[in-house]
Length: 264
Image 1 (cartoon, rainbow, N blue to C red):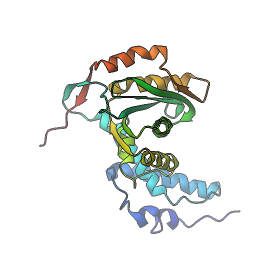
Image 2: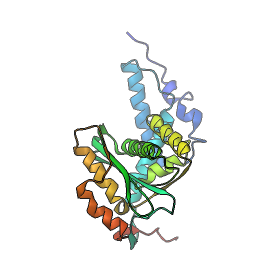
Image 3: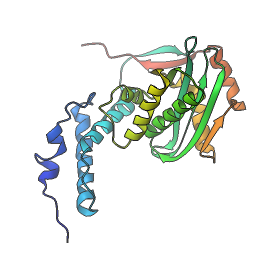
């Protein structure tokens, strides 16, 4: 026999969602998105406490907020209707004296077999270093944070003091700029990234379109296929040389993007 916690702990005035009300947690998704995640996670944690005798998680509300934000950025924004326009996209070189770190993650399924990779170039587009990693089964968001940590670590190993970081995962860029809306599951990775950024000194993190991140995508896909956990590439892989030359030459890629809907 076991004691069933009072239902008020989960759904009454003792519920974390009632106590905190999602206030003071930074950027939030609309309530219509938060609500189903909140109910689903409450139900999961309630069952885990009752039937598996696990301790109740005090950060369920933060987990729901994080998942709803990720869904909004990754699942909804790409499907918004509206007019389209064509833009020309290319890899942007860093300013003189800076280096550029591009990172990307790849997963066969989400979650699924995952890999990641990144590369560092100077203002002339010349190779300074690169890497690829096989992660195993993981979701795409955690992979993006993992590869960023690897890339920042490599920057420190190369004694770089000014780095432009370009990532094609907008949700990660926004999370790094907002310290309050983080899932406790990714907090260790997130804290590592922030500590590494402070160690480097001058770091700018920005979002780029995936067409401008093709070299990092190549290394990420390489990571999903390799047997070694981590491979440091002192020289670029042969199959990557063509893409590196295109980036160095400033070659543009065409991308169709949605224009914001006009005001009513």
